[in-house]
Image 1 (tube, rainbow, N blue to C red):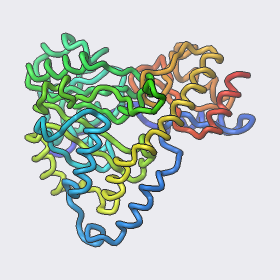
Image 2: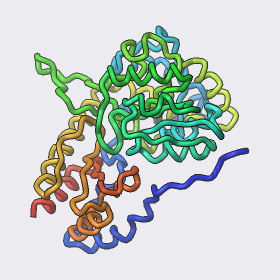
Image 3: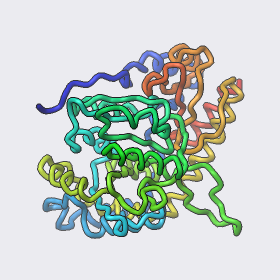
Image 4: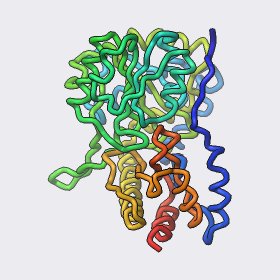
Amino acid sequence: MGFHEFSSPYDWSRIAPYKRTAKAAFGGMVDLSVGSPVDPVPDSVRKALGAASNDPNAYGYPVTAGTADLRSAIAEWFALARDVDLKAIGADMVPTVGSKEGVALMASLLHLGAGDVVVQPKVSYPTYEIGTQLAGAEALKVDDVADVESWKHVPGVRAVWVNSPCNPTGVALDAGQMASIVAAAREVGAVVLSDECYALMQWGNADTEDGTETLESSPCALRPDVCGGSARGVLVLYSLSKQSNMAGYRTAFIAGDESLIVPMTAYRKQIGQIIPGPVQAAMAVGLRDLESVKAQRRRYADRLGILVSALHAYGYCTDMPDGALYVWVKAKSGDCWKDMEQLAQIGIIASPGEFYGAPGYLRFSATASDAAIADAAERLAR
C-alpha cells in the first residue's frame, strides 16, 4: 500500500559537473537547461494577490474545488482560448498545486495499480512514468501515441498520456490525431490524460488578415470535434506557469469527465492538496488577462527564433518547433553527454536528452532572458 518505489534518470544533480565547467568559461555560464520562467509576473496578477491577502479564504481555509470566481475564470478561459464549453460537454474542474503534482498523482487518483498499463510517449516529460511507478502500475512507452495500433490491443491499458505540444520535442498533434486517441481509449476503457500546459505556445501564424493577434493554440482534447461533444473518459491538465510566469504560484488545474473529477476532488480535500485562497484569486485574474499572455508568447517566439538560428549555425540540424518552449536537437557526437561537455566549454548548459528518454538528443530552453539568449547565440556563432 502507499507509494511504490520509482526510478528515473531525471536527476538534475547529474548536470553539476558541466555547470562547473561552464562557470569557468569566458563570460561565465548561460543556463538553457531547466524550463523555469524568468520574466515578470503580470501586474494584474500581483495586484490581485495583494488585494486578496486578507480575504476570508486567506485567514480561513480555502475551497478545494476552487472559488466560484476561479471556476468561472477557468470556464471562460476554456471558451475563449480553447473553443471548449465545459458545461455543454459535462465537464468539471479542480485546481491543482502546480501541474507536476497533478501529473505525479494522476495514476494514483485513478486507482491504478498492479496489472494496469499507462501508455505514454517514449520521448516525454519524465513525471508521467514516475507517477505511474508511484501507483504501482506499468508504463508502456510508444514512439507515437497517435499510432493507436501500437497500444490499443495491449491488455490492461487503463490510461493514455498525451502531451501536445510536447516537452521536449515541440511536436503538436492535429485534431484528427487527438480524436483518434480519444476514440481508441474509449474502446478499451482507458482514460485520456492530455497534458496541454504548452497549448497557447503554438508557433504557427498568430495573426489574422487585419493584423490583429489571436490566441492560436493546439487542439484541446475537450474540443467537440475531438471528444465528440462529451468529456467522458477525458482529462485535460493545464498550468499558468508558462503563459503567465506563475511557476512559483503553483497554479494549475484538471478539467474533464465529471465522474472522475468529483472523487479526485474529495481525495484532494482529505490530503490537503489545495491552492491557497489568495493564489486562487490571482489565478483567476491571470486566466482573464489574455493580453499579458499574448505579450509573453511574443517574447518566447522571438527567443526561440534566435536560438534556432544560432544552433543551426553551430551545426545542429533544427527548425522552429511546432510549439512549446524548447529546441530539441540530435547530438552532433551521437551522445548527449559528450555534447554537454563540448557546450560547457563555451559556457552553455542544455538538458541531456537521456532525461526524456532519448540519450542521443539535447533540449535547449527558451525560458531564459533576452540577454542570456543573445549571449548564447553569440557564443554558438563563434
